[in-house]
Amino acid sequence: MTMNGPIWTRGMGPSMQGDTMVSKRVYFEGTDDNRLAGYLDLPVDSAPAAYALFAHCFTCTKNLKAVNYISRALKREGIGVLRFDFTGLGESEGDFSDTNFSSNVEDLVAAAKFLETEYRAPGILIGHSLGGAAVLQAATDIPSAIAVATIGTPADPRHVRRHLLDSMEDIQASGEAEVELAGRRFKIKKQFLDDLDGVRMQATIKNLNRALIIFHSPVDDTVGIENAARIFQAALHPKSFISLDKADHLLMNAKDASYVGSMIAAWVRRYVT
Image (cartoon, rainbow, N blue to C red):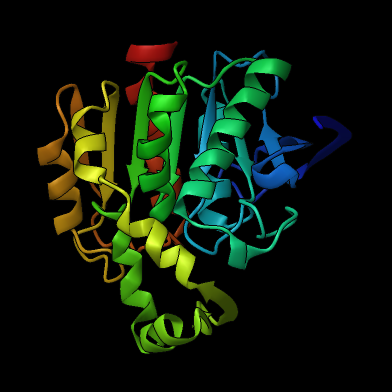
């Protein structure tokens, strides 16, 4: 079930330049036949020179301010961006409690196939926080992707366990527990933790075989800067690192997020445009 929504939105976005937002609402089939919802952000005056696929952070959505700012910066440079909600989040169908890291990877592969079928296969994968780990893992199954960008990404997806420590005993004993994450309540099942244990991220990074750029803040208190060092050390060239001085983990400052988008656009020209 692949659906192209005919709805176009046009209006003033939160860009510092005040540029016009042009987005197409799209739907496609993800994990377990759930309909996933997204926006395809496109350049205003020309066909995209390339397409990027964006993976949002853990329990976030496609509408996070940082995602919007980064997408706008990219489309100003002629790059189309598909940003979507993972299964069970935002406007996408499904039960979040039944998802895990592996299902996020599967959603990304489904999104890439949707782009390839309806528009053009993505040449760029971008992931924020745990979404960064997901794009690293998904790259092997997305052959069109020749460039990967990670933002505030953990070197091992098991890092997310740190946010579940208070509920870990209940999850292990009862098979599930309600946890509070970023001020919202989510049900986390034991299968989520078990799935994380099966990921071998260091081997994935070493065998990435794509151009890689790593963005991380030295004052990130959610995912420490040492994670960027581990990813960089594990990866083979070509690889680059950019320090996001004074930025917070969610890139809530518009200047920080726009900077990331602009730098990805400049870096990726060498590979896909």
